[in-house]
Image (tube, rainbow, N blue to C red; front, side, top):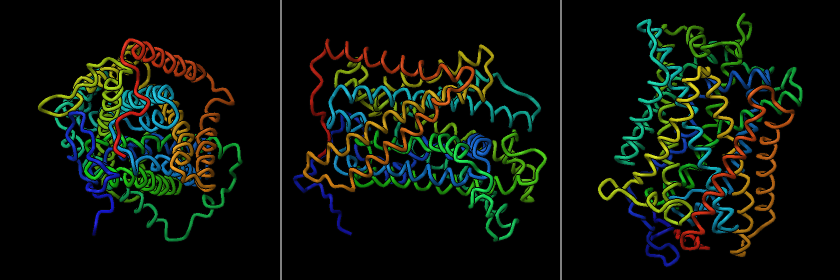
Length: 472
């Protein structure tokens, strides 16, 4: 098949490498970056029970609606990804087509999102690694030690070779998703091929409960855009990255629906409801007639998925830090690539340390691992939603500059902004109780503090270029 985006065409010049390993990642490895950051295996063990607690039998439909909202954002992202490629992810798109300062703000929102997600999932690794150690050997390790091991190993992989880390993410996520899919399908087969109309007709589900569940379901799919951070390293980036953005959102949505449908079905009539179960996949594996050790394998799958998510987060964050360093929005040393490994090595070290510190401090202070996951993950999600709203607003401006703005594009942009706005407002009102009440202020302080820091660096450095170097 003829490649329509041939490099010989004048409108597609050679990608800017920035010293990174140009064209080293296959389409499947590029897809692995987005899938790993979504961490699909984390949903069946942690997110789906929480969504069920809010939306009841509407949990599966909440994931369907959330997938549609995420796909609307993906369509806006791909307006840029089809013609622009760099390590800067959404930061570059927004800086180019709204204003460089808006790009810096979006860059900091994404940094908070990626680093925060890495910190949150390190708690998930510690939780499920200890569950395995308890089941197999009757012992447990210090959570902070497990978080440190995850950080060091992931940092080494990201520092050493982007191709090795991408392949590892691909295999880890593929194995864990396959195992959980088998369990879900066995539950559905055991129930019989009749449809569960209670879930499909939203029996007993109020609009308020569905809205609350929808907010959390949307949050489970964030990170699908992270393949855009591999713009200088992906092979045929103008083709492989848009496909990764679109298909990671679609595949994650299908997987979430399958798991939610099966989990709600499998726990029906159980004395311990889905939202109260500490190990839902263990219960489902037993109900499916599988050996006890399969339940332990699901814990291993969760550990592998959360680890690959941590690796994907620092990979994306490092490339964002790298390009912000190149453009003067952060210290220039962050914008230097390792001469031999061709990785943003200093940015990898910084993003790894930044992810480890908050989780370690909270762990040492005795905060429950699930609470660490929820608290830091919520702050991270504010960053994702902020960036998604901004890139969806930038898409029509970009299309107008090309003379290609259509009513359909305006509608997609408006619907994406509406969907993400509902998710953001739904997490703020009604005001949550306890420590969650203060998280928006923590996020706003971190975002504005980072933006002010970059503003100082820009003033001390050459002016931030109005058009960042990208592939056009």
